[in-house]
Length: 286
Length: 293
Image 1: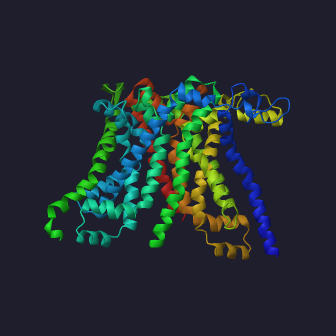
Image 2: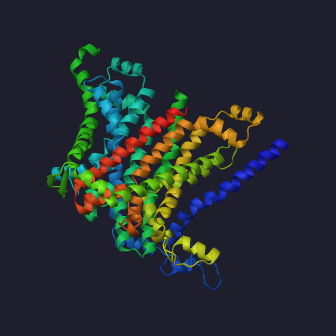
Image 3: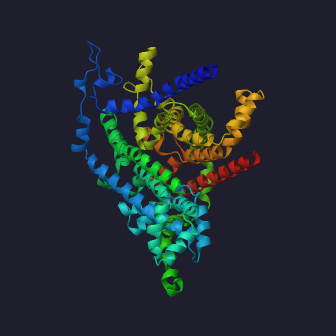
């Protein structure tokens, strides 16, 4: 009985500490959403939702979608949204394919230079991306790839840490015997990669795709450096440009931010469950 | 079977490795080599280059702005390691109760700011810290009657940046610590408790050793990320380094030198100093992690 009571006391204490912290974490999100729905004049008179000055009740009728309609109709944010979707999906897909194939080859196949490549990849893990900013810009200039999506996607689809992760995943969950068995059954090497290896490293495929998608979506420096035409800007650059021009138009900026963070957050919430069930299914099958 | 098709078999590994290896060589290894050459040059845009050899580095050593950038970046890094990580560990320990209701929801809530990119967090934060209409001043005005006109972002550049990253990263690091706490042996904690060890002694002698490997990884990750701070101050301070360069960081100075001034050589030299600092921190951290176990 005493034990039970002290457990209850501990739980109450934990919630007393956690609940305010959770609210504190959520307040900026709530403020962001309400700010995006407010007219400029309501910014000064109300903290979150606009209030009726006489009754003190929430004045729902003062909320507006005008910030959103201006962004889509006048400021072309739809274009930036499509650019972000395209760039993030293409980069995630291509990076996953190149890293999964490369990681598998480095882990399980025999070919000349395998050892040297593996060591180079491991050493490259320490390279800070900003070091490559200036020389990559110069290289893209010489290749005529500045201001193009190709110039933005190509340098991002062979990250050292990606191939490293897939090499580890292959070593861990793709047994040599299984590859041998597939060979004896007459499966081609490329066929083995797609029909035996990829399904076995599926949790890593999901995780790596999601990480790459989010990282590309939120990337700012590279599109800022590589792209010059406003039509090609993804949301990260477009929103930062809006911030430069419409500094005082808080509602507009907050609406742009809402549009930018919703798609990746939704994707994460959807795939999180899928990703976890993929992990546990793999564990049950052994 | 395999003897029938030796040609196909021996070429296949190359076909699978080729996409990665080719792109890795062209877009990682070649730029890395060229970063070495560029660091010895002065350029005006991507074309006109002139060899100045080690001049860029002697110039950097004398450049007060570069030292300012290093100082600011190190302050931010120290804050990440000594403020952000202890908070993350504390939060993880609060959450680490198997029977706790709503554990998954708490974890998701604390992690959620991480899903928002730095540029978007910076946009949100700069308006929260804004003078009259910002949330912070409104809360302070409403709660304590403080004036609405206090310019947080212009007065406390580093503290506002640190506060913003606390919101963004405490939950992210908490997830690692939460996983690490699963390695703490419950029976060892109980035994220590029976032997009369207080909460601090149990934390110091049982919990810390158990989470050490993950903790040292998180520390390294945090240092690597902090040393490369750029987007947050850049966007929060409207594409400037802030009043008196108080928001200037190493990567921001690299960006300004390379893409605003147009000297890709100076930018590359800054990149090499950054890389050296990272390697240095990684070595020190690895030594510390090894010697203490």
